Amino acid sequence: MKLKVHPLFWVFLLMYLALGAFAKIGILLFSLLFHELFHLFLYKKLFQKPVSLTLLPFGGVIETSNPVEFFPGKELLVAAVGPLANLILMFFALGIINNGFFNANVAFLLDFNFIMAVFNFLPVLPLDGGRMLRAVLTRVTNLRIATRIVSNISLVTAFAVVAAGIYGFLFRINGADVVILGVLLIFLASRERVKNSFYFLQNLTYKEKILNEQKILNSKVLTVARNTSLKEVVDKFLPSHYQYVVVLERNQEILGVLSERQIMEGVVKFGLLKPVGELLPK
Image (tube, rainbow, N blue to C red; front, side, top):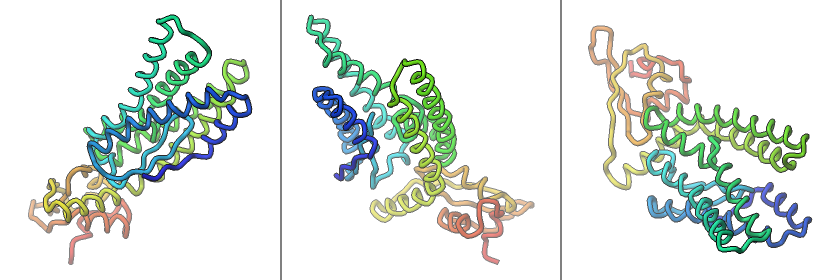
């Protein structure tokens, strides 16, 4: 597993070092690793594939060779266990306090994990809250549309965090760190919008890989009129199935059958507005 560190992680680390808060650095690192280990443990249990991890100031981003977003139920579970880890540490800190032991470090453990849990529950991709929301939406629509919806929600939420951070900073409610994190969220959400354009091609490549390895894959047949746009066809594709498209003439005569690969090649070559019937051989 490759471990990467986002530049903003070092910024926050240096801030605590400059303040001489060495105990807080230890608590911060322990909380982050505890959070991410929960993700990694469940991911390996469900997929058993190597992963890379990029550490952020309030969590991390797991990049996989086995895209978890193509399996909504599993993505929901993998995303949910991260904030669960923070809740466990919160209850641990509360247990220490209830037993009569309280100091600044225990308070920081409680506060930091509370903030980290709330932060990761925000509906922002690629944070846990965004992944959970996308997993729920993918059960009723396809991955591309679900990612587009959540990406839009992500940007609105990120700008709201920046606005709240600026307000809090001006009135001395919080520090500049909230504004910085909001800007990070805008960057991450914008990157997910760009990646969304390639999800359907990545999904197709992954399905063909599974078919070659396992020799069997669930399929779905769509029946469409010849003047249906490729966008309308692709919007009906499911991430867990290989699609075949039956193209009909107005009199219900079958003109031909296109595979998901042929549809995607048509999208790349002609764009999403091309009528599906024009992909059939003359």
